Length: 243
Image (cartoon, rainbow, N blue to C red; front, side, top):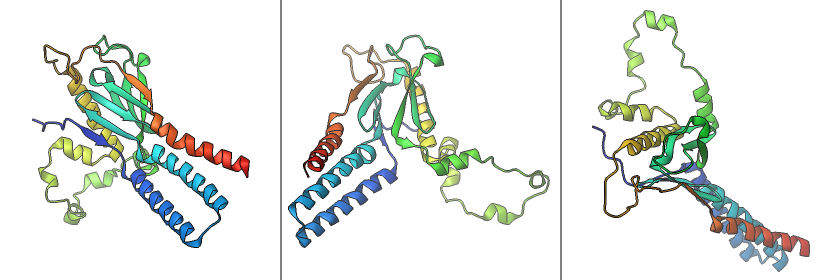
């Protein structure tokens, strides 16, 4: 029996978050340098507007995106738009350039449409790296000569496996062998299938979760993210035109 799934999981990749904090350190160092050197007011304003504009973009494109799985479904937080897809509406989770959530438009729990009727949401936070694409495109070589003769013991001894690897269940071993985004896709697809087929619990009042009847797929603009990019960019444009 598989272990119970956590009720809320947040998925994102480390490189964009690292980039965000590196950029914040760069901005802080530049602001301190301008303060020490006593730069002119006009130059300081122009540079500040440029830094704020890029910081807004870094926030929207690097720090903000994530995918949240909870009892009600998947919340896809993209740079300028948020989507919420109930478990009952999800048809599949796979990968292309990004992790993709295929869902059925209309009321969750209705008759399953064909794949042509499904819609797709790409998750900006979970992208497939170029290295993972190269690894996936290379077929694993299996020379016949290796299959015909026994391998020396040293082949099995190096590289050594971690002590706990042999005790992992088959599903965990399979996920560990996949690139990060593909492993997340398999995990979410498995959870969506389990949540979709699990009998709904009858309760006197509607509750948040997979069994809530009529819960729609929703999408809304992320106005704080839009403002974080648009306002500094507008200020920069005004400053450039005024100079």
